[in-house]
Length: 125
Image 1 (tube, rainbow, N blue to C red):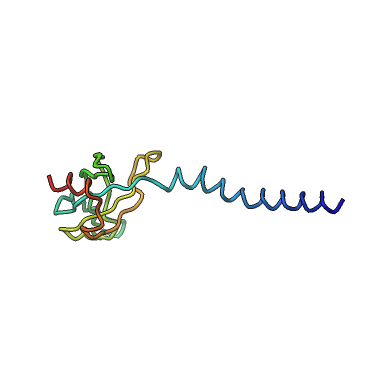
Image 2 (image 1 turned 90 degrees about the vertical axis):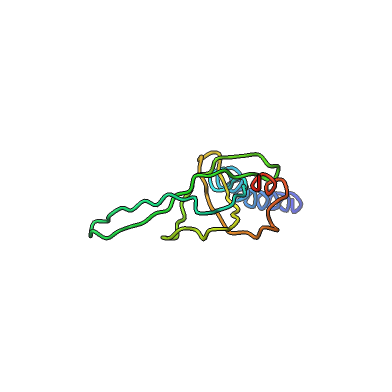
């Protein structure tokens, strides 16, 4: 009787621990995860100026350029700076692209030495 109670508690504990893991794997990863691509930012942005309700200028900077995964495969990446100013030119970026949402989820500046060799070879062509 005591042994079956321990087994039941053990199984319940395992199930409770698996629920967040399953949620992460089947919901979070497909919606907010993605594949990493690398690109080089020069002055390749398009500036859009819009007026807000108060008549103030609001500037956004859009990028539409090629990125390469760690194997050198190309993907066209469209993203904005999200900074209120252009991304500093002459920088390498690591961009996370989500296939399900068909969009860039995030980007971050990386050092040239952090860019995988096959990606860098494609960028420098």
